[in-house]
Length: 175
Image 1 (cartoon, one colour):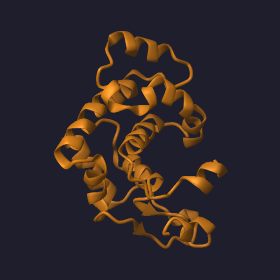
Image 2: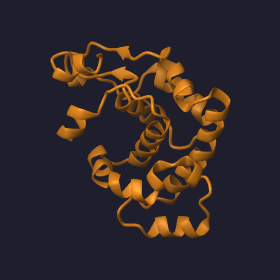
Image 3: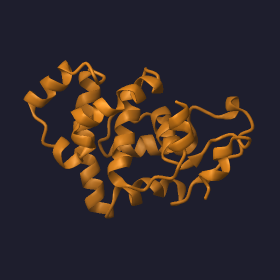
Image 4: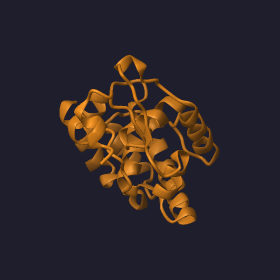
């Protein structure tokens, strides 16, 4: 967790395939700890073709059966099917907007929201923007994208800076 925090969490991310990975992993995390997902992250990457939506969208029953037997990932049929169906919606958004990045970052006016949290307890589980993102993503067909998942996605990908102001990463991720 320390390595993830110090090198990755909260850094603004604009690479479509990595954004897709995060939205998938955040959805897989529902009801579990983020530590569990980080421990299985490399297994997820291998199992889901490095989160290549062009490949994932073609998964059929045989691949789904293999995924459900893969102890290295979260073997929840709903979550696995969500990743596959989300890949199709993701590709549609890329086509419509030119990139998923352009679409998803519109929720924060294409620049990170700079919060000024003093304590970890000041960080909410969801926000109005996360609620809006969740509602829109669900409307267009995404699954496992509730407001809490969307806010965690926003935090992880640097759409919001929720490092507390005393954290050395608070200023780093702004640069």
